[in-house]
Image 1 (tube, helix red, strand yellow):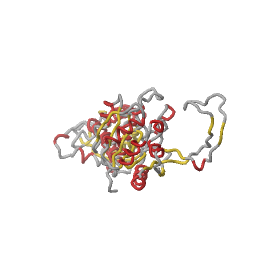
Image 2 (cartoon, helix red, strand yellow):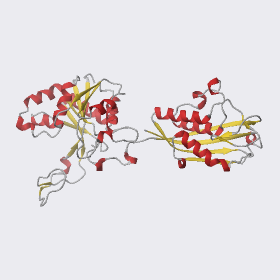
Image 3 (cartoon, one colour):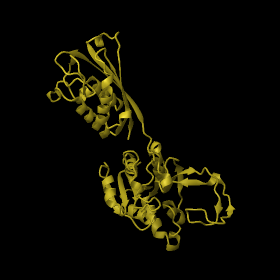
Image 4 (tube, helix red, strand yellow):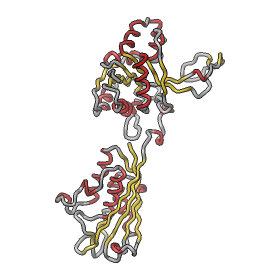
Length: 388
């Protein structure tokens, strides 16, 4: 597309029907507003983002601080229509995509389809077919069904569409329509497209998405499992170290009484190492050798639980959350059962998990020569993570 595109995100509402600022609602590590900003930041057609703020300006500024595209913040008006107008007036693009910031789940496909249609015909909006039968009846207040609410007619559902945002326009045509709209017609504006409709301009509907819904009341707030389409990822880790004299035996951060310890550059905590590799592997972020090289003096004798805490930070920095860990120790001696609860707690603390999300087991495998009587200890680990 040759035309420049400005995304105008209207975030100036008072959330009176919600009772708190819905744009600050946590979608699992990311607010509603930040998720909406990110959708347009990642769209290759969008060249700038205009945020329309109200009394929440400080919050809006904070949420836009890490946006990689040019951002400007303007003050909204007393109505949704005025706020949208202020955003469009400030926009520099030849096309504008006006979006409700309370629709955080808009997809790239929905944005692109509406923009391309607006570039062709001047105005477009995503929409989805209405699923329910609609009744036209006595006027209500928009919140409850009034008493004695008699039905006038039942419109043909096949001609009805629920309109979403972003509603996209040729900016020059939008401003021209504003000039033509008289005060009487202005009261009939219910969405941005109605501005075009009331001035005799065509509006094209494009394919929307039922997931692109607007958060308006508490009933619209997503349940935990609906907050975002989190992607689950699994990683596997394996480590083995030889037992030698003159070393402490550290497993899962616990010093286990034994006549030998594990040989290694750090404290050789084979259990912590396997778990770290599983976590890093799930996120495709390399392994512990890459992050903590065994030829770096800084990690000589290092406490592996401290390294595990750093691994947890690395995952969070890359947008991942650890869900649970399952690990197995393989050795003949010593007996580890009495120390496993402390190992679980240590690993849980290091990775910021509840202890019931960490499993540690111990078994013997005599046929593995390296881990035979007094030779060495191995550990397997599996980690489940999800995207934030």
